[in-house]
Amino acid sequence: MQTGSSVELVSPHVLCYPKAGALVLDHCNMDHGIEVKATLTTCHGTVAACKDITTIKNGIVYGSDASIIHGIIDEGNKNKTGPTFINLSFNGGLQRATDYDFALLSQAEQDTFVSAYYWHMTNVLMSVAALKDEYRQNLVITIAAGNENFPMADMMDMLRQRPRIANILRDNVLVVSTERIPGIHANYAYDDADVVVLNNQSATSGSSLAAPCALGYMQEIVNRTGVTARQALKAMKDASWLLPDREVTLDNALAMLAGGHYVAGACVIKDTISGGANILQQVTYNVSSVDLLMRAPSGQMGGEDYGFCYLTVKAHVRVICISGCTGPASEGDVVMTQDSLEYHGNSLGGIASAPFYSSYAMVGLNGTRSGSTISGYLYLPFVNANNNRAYITLNKQ
Image 1 (tube, rainbow, N blue to C red):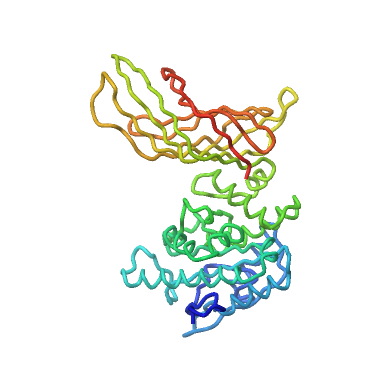
Image 2 (spheres, rainbow, N blue to C red):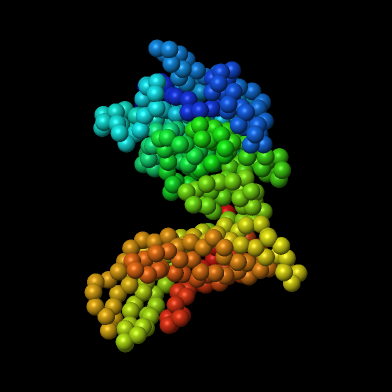
């Protein structure tokens, strides 16, 4: 069937499982759906409709992927160019009536879990992909990550290998985890751009009540600022990098829209550093990316706006001895950050750092904003360096 030219996808019809609440696609008039709708309202959202997508097997309520597929396609076609907001607080996994920890499953059980989760996500994402391009431009769907202590990163990468899914994840989907569950940890992927953390009050019951809160936040962003649903989604993802463990808040998401997100690519900074007792070292920073999130202005100083940025610099650092020292080279990948880099008017500057062996890796940025770019220098902020530096341009995303 999959080889047919008119066939987009052939997949198993897997069941999925509620994780403490849902909206639009859920067990609408029972506790699970009721809690989700209440959470969405508490988080500034509104409930337009709820479609029951559940089935009962051996006395246990499950979500049906067939119903979910029809629900997504029907909602997208009904709203057309939107905005369209959908929440799904079910995820794939094992057919069990009680909670379980992925780390404690047998290898066979883990394989079954991952397969069911993968195909469930594939069905959901391909349903979005089946909509007309213009309908997807203003459509977002929040998906609860689940509560099985499952490390999702590899599975998310597997999903992106399927045609079209990478773009759907980036432009239309927010997978929502939480740190608030008192028992088994929620499923997680801290370095994945499409998975964020919400720690709203009701999320103590699970990621299903974190997901509708994220949807409510995006509705509020659209209503308050007039941006599209997709732009609100991007603001949520950008804001998630501002706090430890990828937690996103409504205030930070709004700040992303008021400020801006700037990115630069690779560069190399190589310098020599002198120390006591005739020590001379060569330091090389192979920078892979520079990411700057500019918050909304905090106020005015001297008639100009001032405020703070979050700077992230990823690099491979190598330190070798030239003279006066012994031992092998020190090297490794580091992520240097600064959560309060200052800007004043169009000028900004500060230093990002990260632990590196028994010391710190550090890189400074001095730049000037002009329109949609920030241009300036990355440099090594060591007092006894030779001030070698790299000129970079950060482009607004």
